[in-house]
Amino acid sequence: MKEQILKEFKQQFGDGGDIRCYFAPGRVNMIGEHTDYNGGHVFPCALTIGTYAAARKRKDRLLRFYSMNFEKLGVLNSSLDELKPDDAAGWTNYPKGVMWAFEEKGMNIPNGMDILLFGNIPNGSGLSSSASVEVVTGAILRDLFGFDVSNQDLALIGQFSENKFNGVNCGIMDQFAIAMGKAGHAIFLDTANLSFEYAPISLDGAKIVISCSNKKRGLGDSKYNERRSECETALAELKEKLSINSLGELTEEEFEANKNLIKDETRIRRARHAVTENQRTIQAVAALKANDLALFGKLMNASHVSLRDDYEVTGIELDTLVEEAWKIDGVIGSRMTGAGFGGCTVSIVKDEAVDTFIRQVGEAYEKKIGYKADFYVVEIGNGPEKL
Ligand code: GLA
Image (cartoon, rainbow, N blue to C red; front, side, top):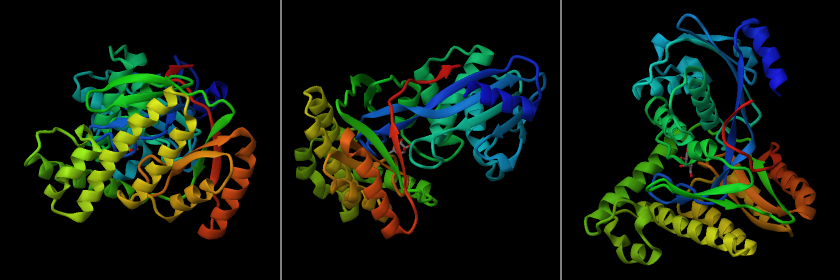
């Protein structure tokens, strides 16, 4: 891959100078969905697919961007003196947002750059292609200009840029999973205080299969912000009586005993998801540690049901993928992953059932939805690296 991106870089921007190459992964969340902005736990892992980058410092303050995924857009020009969100700038708002965030944090970027990206994560699929671009941009800036930032800082800067520059109030899960990834492990992260633990994922005789719905997300970001504010309102209502800082602090029993403080039926369901999903995530990691993969799978299935019925972020496409998966012998668990409203599902599938899974789920999906889904058998990879 390095040779390919170097060749393309030279073709777009010309040869010469110190051209450096980098990689940051995508991520998949195994369980713990829509808990990260509710002070709950998440359990994501980095993937071996992600975003490749080639970058070179310039002598002036110009920024030139090229994405091999959006060839038709050609080279897009900007400048360090123009770091503001711009609808016409498309994908470059992500790297520009990270540059803006570095400067906001007091790290002034002295030179412009030529930057080429190539991603082998399906775009907008719910595998965090945008967080991957954010983290790879942070890795470029750290290496080219010698900024003293840790991988965890790269995650926080990425989230800050997404919240403040790109206007999506995402939690920390995606950037953290990507910046802190470790091959063969998922990250059990407590988003209330960022304490975390690596848990080995040894799926003896099974694989992680991602099914991509190919549904364009469209309204997803605004719905995401809407869910987030529903949870914030529910928390404020509970706080009238309870002294808690987040929904993640509640057990199911505490929630049930106090849910009537929430003055709206929909908000009760939203908050119930946040509470039960956090508890499921804690139980799922315990099950994994006890080698009880069957229980882990059941909790994944229950997570999907809660996201479908209480949180209402699935939709017919994700529901079809998951319900078809559940019908297949050898499927240990299956659920939507990421923000929802389109995007992907994650399933744990026994080796011998993988081909049947892809064929049967694929055929049923196309028949019902009218277009194809894509399937990826993925491996758990490391965080960002210089190639
Ligand atoms: C998106 C956000 C994350 C998280 C998930 C839902 O991926 O970026 O912070 O909230 O949705 O779990």
